[in-house]
Length: 538
Image (cartoon, helix red, strand yellow):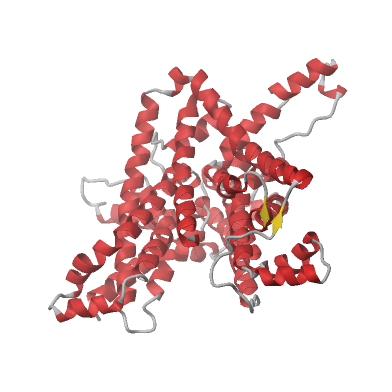
């Protein structure tokens, strides 16, 4: 057994250990706290989670499917701009957009104040205005941020379809709308289901928005159970229910791809368009894109810029620099660790000859599907056990380690590596595919061992993929909130937790620069995706 085999399996086992501990703990005997929740509010948490996911999926379809069809098949004023700009809302954290719209639409917000001034209303009894701090309001906020997943995947699927099928449907007398529902949408069903599964997982993982809106879901239940009841077992059992939801979503996504068969594809993406929109139709298409982009990205960013300008002195302070440095430090450590570990595992896949060579990478990537709160509980379980063992070892000495692992910054770093390793693995693996195996044989013929081949041959050719992997992991670390809230040491803040604390206190204005920095950082992967798509289409 080679050292590469041992190293790869060690990484796979280490990074999948939290999930194994979580499953094991969730199957343990009854917990008094969990029994109490089961008999009282747990099913409310489950029903709210299901309703929230359903609402987000419906709204995402309403928003994204027309946009994807317009971008893929139609030519109208501004199409080139909207094709990439409609992905920008992904950079906006949901809790920031939730706060901004709450501030605008609340009873004391500027919109209702103007309405009362215009119509002479004196109290809430004089008129009706929807309450944004509800489950439906949370669904709208989350859908505004997550619809680009469906938009991008659906648009790409349509571009890969053959125009001949659409043109044949036109010859049969079908209108563009009929062709959409009877030809384009059924052929892209697998892609749509995959995107909806991703959106459902992201919705279930959302903590800040539902917490801010006081909507009780399984995510908030995990958080409240741990911080309110200090019951790790009950939190693990609730996390187990969330895992069941995740496995169902993944199973449905894989089933849809298994049953999805496309018999005709073009060699590359279609660069032309089927429909030239003019007059009223062109105006409606452009207006729809403008409205979606305005409400999902332009308006929230404009409000943040206004906050940053008006509250510059309060927001640009020593706390901002401290929390930015702490976020930067953690993100760098995690990025380096994730890239190095993925490089070792993927190199093992390349040189391995046995059929199980891909298993370590799959085991190591299991943490990516875990929501932040679930991941935090999963990480706490083995780290708490190790802390107890370490304290037992030193019990007869004067040294008291305390919470050496679970109570330090190590817990955050380990959790982030577990969660974001899959991103680094995918980027490095995609880069390795482009390296011809003949280079390995040439290196061996020159007397180079495997380590020399990795460092002298592979690494220079992998630099762009490694940089991309590190950058993507870095950005995700900067934005991560739920795991940071549960795992951060006492009095330790990151930019995400700093902004969330001010959001919870209804004072986002004082953290507006921090929020803008998070949004700006989130724009980087969108730029990378857009550039890669442009290069692919050339």
